[in-house]
Image (cartoon, rainbow, N blue to C red; front, side, top):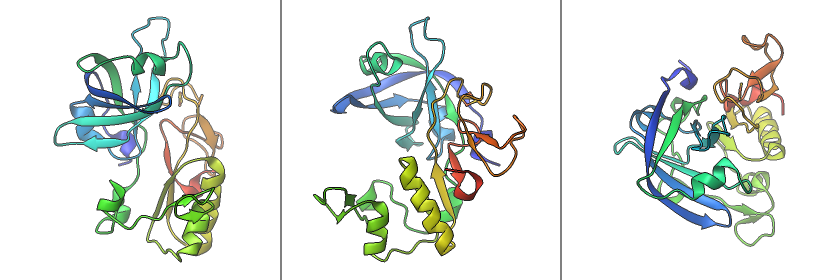
Length: 229
Ligand code: FES
């Protein structure tokens, strides 16, 4: 069963905390009940605005899942004045937000069972850092860090900008490492109906019957060989 087949729920989720952690970047914990219980890394939720003129919900990736306490952490950027994300950033603890999720297809955790998985990074595995200006770790990008440290892997999970994903996909192919990537696209419905979020794929999509995949429904996590970047 793909994770996109996991039962999604729409419910009112109370904000537990909201914190500004950088310029226009917010971290919000939600009391999310079964949405948190059913969620896996790589999935997202759609948050609904209280403003009736904004019909479409805003898709936001899951940053952290606490199944025991049924909480979700979302880290998001305010994308402009008058946007849904600006509205969310102004809401305080105790305020409910209409939330749909979990949505999309997450990372296949079976691929790394028994291996080190970076969760809160250093607590769970070896961490290698790359910065473009060399201020920390390897000077360069993630591929430079992989090569400089001679890193090997049983599986690769990656998210980030398309050029980086392209380079990681090529590296994984060259080394024969199974690789999953999280794609980003602008979304509208968030549930696979409108085709606003398609990316090019190797196979024909069962919904649109062309070489497309819907990032919101078939992804956002794909096996790297399934999609074109
Ligand atoms: Fe509508 Fe993906 S956002 S199909």
